[in-house]
Length: 350
Image (cartoon, rainbow, N blue to C red; front, side, top):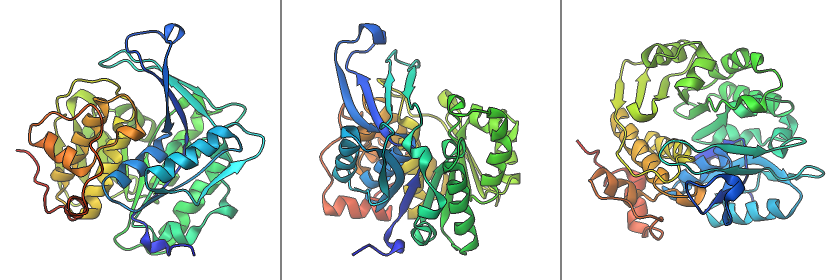
């Protein structure tokens, strides 16, 4: 029997694919000899990150009708992410993404999403709008706006959620700018404006904020996002940390957590999953940003994206000054998970 929509803490909508990452750092892709296979895709990684923190999550996306699609379903279930809205598109291959690893700050990505990515075949008439309206957090991305029918489906989901009177629910627009996915990048600003008018939180790096608002200076970009309609603007500044500005005047500017970087890819998705965890827990804005920064840092210190997502005790340990393990620790106990959900065990480092 389907779960009632209100049982979901987080529903994300957007990209999914297979990440094929080299197991050798500092080696060009042409010379790499060994690779690892991982669940990937920004919106999907955010769902995994939130699930690792104890949240009930689901993802709305599409795969190919192939072996990689089967793998992604198995991986989602293994991470505790509901895959009921992950459907196959006959005739289209599941996307594959390769990367190169040149720490600390060079991680080229190679997307294979031709002739078209199945996740861009999401259709408005096939969405479970009641579930989208009932989720405590709905997370969508800029990539979902790059092509039809995904564009219309994404805007329909936002419109229905806005019209449903979601009260304290959170609608997050991950600006997620990938120009190579757009046939006409010039369309982006107007489409982003439509989405921002129906979202409550916007999150993106400086380049993505500039695409959405025309502003690159962090405070100017945050204010422009608020003027576009959201209540909370989160501007990621890389080595300068993160700026969060709320419409009520609350501001948090948090420095990055020092870490030995292995792979910077996926850190932003860990940040996103941890951010919504903190928002759902009702933490103060600065505490939420510190927790999210630490989660992102942990993933940057590991090779993969989805499987690298941390558990609550790992994030708390890093905030207390202890170095993270190279790989995630085993699943937390029920008591640890409950404390992570309530936020009672979390105190941001000074």
